[in-house]
Image 1: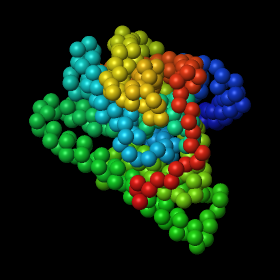
Image 2 (image 1 turned 45 degrees about the vertical axis):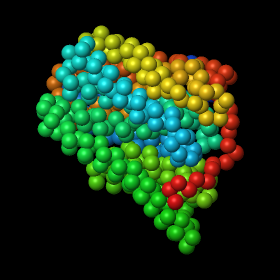
Image 3 (image 1 turned 30 degrees about the vertical axis):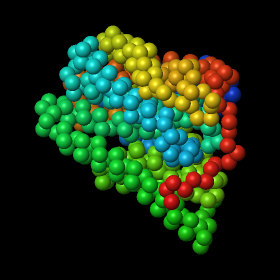
Length: 432
C-alpha cells in the first residue's frame, strides 16, 4: 500500500506540471488557475480520493490552516510592495487612501448590519463577519494587479495597493469583534482598542517595516562590499526580510502584515541597483504561486456539501449583497471627486469605477482571519455559521471573478487602460 503522503506529492507534482505546461492555453480561457486548484482540491478531499484532509474524526485543524495562510499572506503582501514604484506622496496614492479609509470601513460595517438584521448574529459576531470578509485578496487577484514594476495603470495600482494594505488593516476590526464577543459592554475595552489595536499596532507596523527593511539592505550592502555572497543564495535575502520583519513586528504587538507590505515598498526604493528588487520580486512571486496551489487545494478539501447547503440561504444573501451592492456602491462613494492621474478627465471613468467595484476578490486573507478567530473566542454555532458563509463566499469569488477577470481586463486594456509605462524603476528617496 502506497503511503498517502507519497500520493499527495505525486498529485501536487502532476498538477504543477499540467498547469505550467498548459499555462499558455489556460491564460486564454475565461478561468483562473485558482479555479483549477479548487476543483482538484475538492477531488482530493472527502468527496473524492480523501488524500487531503484538515478534518480528522470531525476535529478541524484550524491552527494548521492559520499558519499556512499566514505564510501565504505575508509573502504576497511583500510582493505587492515590491511591485509598486510610485512616489510615496498622498496625491499619487489617493485611490489607495480612498479604498482603505472609506471603502473598507463601509464594507465591514455594512456587512455587520447585514449579519445583525438578516443572519441572526449579535454585534460581535456580525462585526467579525464583516472584518473576515473585508480583505481583498493579493494572492488570487494576480490577473488584475500590476503586471510589473513599470506598470503605472491606475486600476491595477489601486487593486494591488488595496490588496496589500487591507489584509493588514482589517485586523483592528477583527480585534473589535473579538472584544465584543468577550464583553458586550463596549465601554470596558473601547479605549484600549483605540490605543493598542488601532493606533499602536498600526504605527509600530509602519515603523518596523521601514526600520527592519532599511537595516537588512544596509547590512547586505556593507557585506557585499567586503565579500560578494553566493548568487544562488542572494534571493533568500527577500525571504529573510519577510520573516524578520513579520516576526519582530509581532513581538512588539504591531501588525506584521502591514510591516511586511511597507518593507516591500522600502526594499524597492533602497537599492541603487534596480535589478536587485526585481530579482527579489521574481523569487517571491515563484514562492507565492507555489503556496497558492497548496492553499486553494486545502480550501477545496475543506468543503462539505451538507453544511454548505445548511447555510446556503445566508451565504447567498452575503454574496449577492457584497458582490453586487456593498462593494460597488462603496467604491462609487469612495471615488466621488477622484481625478485620475495622467488623464485630462476631471473624474475617474465610470467604467473604471465599476471595475474597482467588481474586483473585490475574496480569498486567502479571509481564510486566515477566519482561522485566527477560531483560536480567539469564536466558537459554537456562530463559528459554524461564519465559517461556512466565508468558505462559500470565497468559492463564489474564485468561480465568478476567475471566469470574469480575463475578459473584463482585456476589455479594459482595449478601451480604458492607461498604457503609459516607465522605462525603469524610479529612484525615490522618501525613506532616506
